[in-house]
Every structure is written in structure tokens, then in C-alpha cells.
Image 1 (cartoon, rainbow, N blue to C red):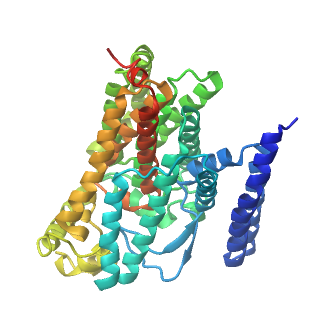
Image 2 (image 1 turned 90 degrees about the horizontal axis):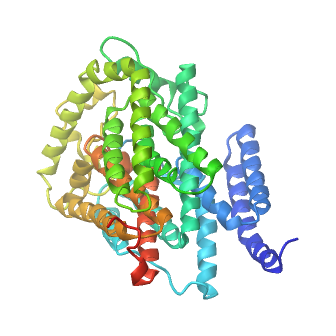
Image 3 (image 1 turned 90 degrees about the vertical axis):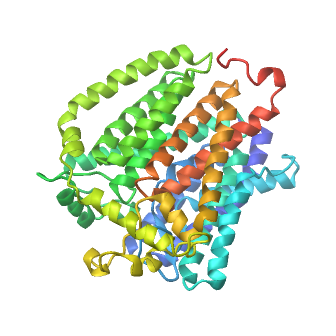
Length: 498
């Protein structure tokens, strides 16, 4: 029988849930371009409401929904769309937004009813706001106001995501649910990627973010010198984006497997880690492989520091090493071909893009050319004419040079300060006792390293899905910090390596 408190909680939750999902239904139905999309929208909303109430915990349902959907590209665009790379291209409402709004409502309700003493806003948020201020300056004074506004609106949404998730993950139990949602999303993406490889063709899910058949064919023709290679993308638009997504979340699945959480849950995390590793190989993304290797080294080094996890980590590490060797051996031909038979076009192209970027940077080295303006401003500094790229101006495949070009040395320093601030907090959190919190922090730290390595070879942090993952992982780090500081001093370091 439902308890009075739970019944009251569900009644209180009904209004915001119906408003949010009702609004989402109305929006998608009105703006859908075809009957199939309208029907899919109605079914999505109906299933969401039923499952939310059926779960008995709509707030927890919203957390899982948010974590699962942050990797999806399904969205409705508004206003002008700027077809370019290296930054946001439009104003949009995304499939993950309703879940975020539900969590934001619950958070505001807790603040209004004094269930929470206050809103936690991590200091690194102000660094992000400083970069946002540079974007606002571009809107006011720059020539590319619309595209700068696109990026600023996205930055506002990322800020909301960061603050909401930081304040939502107040207990180890809630943190484990967050990890579970992230890993469930990764498992679903991995299964899609494996199916793509098995079929040797797309699944017809471009509306959800699957790479277009044309792009896949171009990649197949241009990746290797001697043969075609099928590269999977999941639902993340491009194999390289899919690769870095997997490289940053496989550590979370592997680390969570070490927790004492019951056989079915551990089997779930193990299956996700295995499927993710196989899908990562099928991306044939060398930058993602390098990022994953760096993340794995960091995760292994950090996990053995915890006294309670050390033995389990060493045993699991041995099993993981053997598994990776076996998987590598099974696909050794494909891996070796990708490593040693790749066409030089991609490497030479990246080098050329970096030269173009540096010519552009030295003209305005301190404050840059304006947020989200790279592809517009780089044209006079390209060594080759735009028609050589079929009219598609290429963004530099290096996030650090992209930041430098758009926001100058000042903006680059702020970006690096933000990343370093999160990393430093994660290092301080290695003193935490609770195993769930330790695992979450260790996985997030490993993912930060993966993003740092990937940044030298791509601009994935300027794409919606990887950027959302980055901010959720950052929120996990900050949530662990706040939880750690609430614990009695004597218990903060117990269980950590002596």
C-alpha cells in the first residue's frame, strides 16, 4: 500500500511533470513535419509520463532520463541555422531538456520549502560565465552576432545542467543512479554501433543522430590507403565523436563494476564496459583510442589508492588487461591496418588546419576574433581556397587552438583554468572514504584526462553531446567534493590507501 508521504510526493510531482511533458508534446506535435514524427512525439511523451508515475519516483526517473538522453542529437531547431563546424549552429530544444527542467523544478521546490539550505554554485562556474561574457561581447560588438548568440544560449543550458546535477547528486545512492543512467545510455549507443558494424550499413536513424550515409561513405573511402573501412558512429553524428564519448564513459562502467552492488547490477556494468570497448574499436578513431588509453592508465592508478578497492581493482585490472588483449587479438588485423595503413590525408589536413589557425591567431592573439566565429574569420588565412574543401570551411581540429583563435590568450587561459580547477578538485577528492563516491570521482577524473588528450586532435568539446557529458562529469566531481566536506573530519580519509 502506498504510504501517505509517498502519495503526497507523487501528487506534488504531478503538476510539474504534466506541464513539462505536456509542453514537450505540444511543441513536438506542432513543429513536427510529418505524421510519423508527430506520432513518435506523442508516444515518447505518453511513455514518459506512464513510466515516470509507474516508477514511483518521478524525480529519479528524470535523472535517469537525463543521463540516457544527453548523448542524443534529437532536437528541434529555431531561427536561422548556420551550417558550419566547430560550434553551435542554431537555437534548439533537445530531447534531454524536459528531464533537465523537471530536475530543476524539484530543486527549486526544495529551496522554496527549505528542504535544502541553499544552492551550491561551484566556483568554476564563474570561469564559464566569464567566457560567456566574451560571447555576449561578440553579440553586442562583433560582426557574427547570430552565431555568437547560438553559442551563448548553449552555454546557458550547460550552466544549468552543471548546477542542477551538482545539487542533485547529494548522496552516494543518487550518484550511483547517475552513473547507471550514463552507462545505460552508453550501452544503448554501443549496441547500435555494433549493429551498424555487423550490417555494414546505417540503421536509418539519422533523425536521432546517426551519421549520414554520405559521410560514412566518404570516411570509408578516405580512412585507409588500400581498402575501405566501415566506421561506426552510434547516434553521435561522427565516428570520432562516438569514440570520445565511449572513451570517457567506459571507465565509469569499469569502475562501477568493482562496487559491492549485487550480481545483476555488476553484470550490467560489465556488459556495458565490454560492449563499449568493442564499439570503440569499430569507430576506428585513433584519437579516441589514444584518449581511452590515457583514461585507462589514470583510472588504474587511482583505483588502487583506495584501501577497500585495491584488491578488487588489481584483480579486475588483470582480467581487464587479458580481455583487452583478447579483443585486440580478435581485431588485430583491423587495428593494425588502421594504425599503419591510414591515408596521410587526415594527418596532413589537421597540420594544415593548425597552420591556418596560427596565422589567424597572431593577428588577434589576446582577445581573439569572437566566440563561435572561427569558420567565418579564418577564410582569409586559409592556404587553400574554400572551393578546395567543397565549400565547407574546416574548423581547426584542435580545441586549444580553436579556443585561442576565438577568445584569445585570455579566453584560452580561462578554459584551461576551468579544466584545471575541476581536475584539482578531483585530485583532492581522492581522500574520500565512500566507495561509490570514490569510484564516481575516479571515473570522472579519468574522463577529464581523455578529453584533454582528445583536445589536441579534435574539437569534440564544441559539439553538444560530448560537451554535455563533460559538464555532467564535472558536476559529479563537484558533488563528491560537497559530500566529502559534509562528512565528519575523522571519516573523510578512512579507507584510503595508507
